[in-house]
Picture 1 (cartoon, helix red, strand yellow):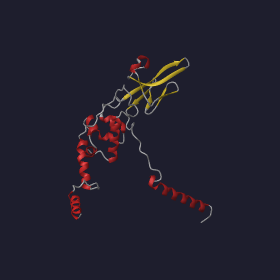
Picture 2 (cartoon, one colour):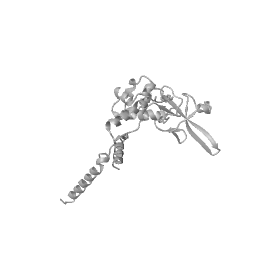
Picture 3 (tube, helix red, strand yellow):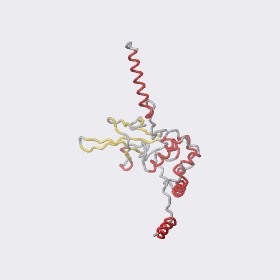
Picture 4 (spheres, helix red, strand yellow):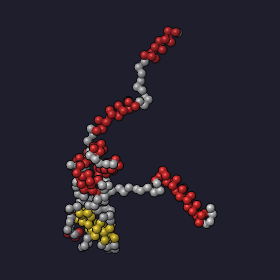
Length: 236
């Protein structure tokens, strides 16, 4: 019996150890770096430009937040969509939230999620013309749509295939096109021009110090208001 216990003890000592499951900083770092080259080797998808956003400068102009000033740092369209966050930092695209914002808009563009005017096909010198297309559905029902037409053309001069329906705009009344950045033209219709920040995600602003201090600040304000009310009534 004693020899059996000795053999079983020796077996436990000589048994190969399993890989440690505890969190070891060095091992975790090695695991992360082992996967990093595989991720970096993936080639990012480069979307094709669209008529409304044909180049780097226009893209940085419409998404706003001052990114237009960095246009000269991107020599090509491909560079705009392939540079990593670290490379953007080396180029001087600061602060970090601006880089994150640019990366978010790059991904949106890849997915075809454009801002106003992203569905426009006919544009010249950064400006597109919008017209009203009318269609009689019934003798009593007339449908009016906003369409994009080649510059200088009228709806009755074009075939349906030459007109592009545009989202984000509507007809107010009979002859007025309303929508973001739409400027009325002299002889009807409206003009949409490339404008800085027209696709920009507007930042929120803190009210009463933001979420963390909001309750404290509002409590102190109520205390001060009650104190001022008592003093105005002669109670001290």
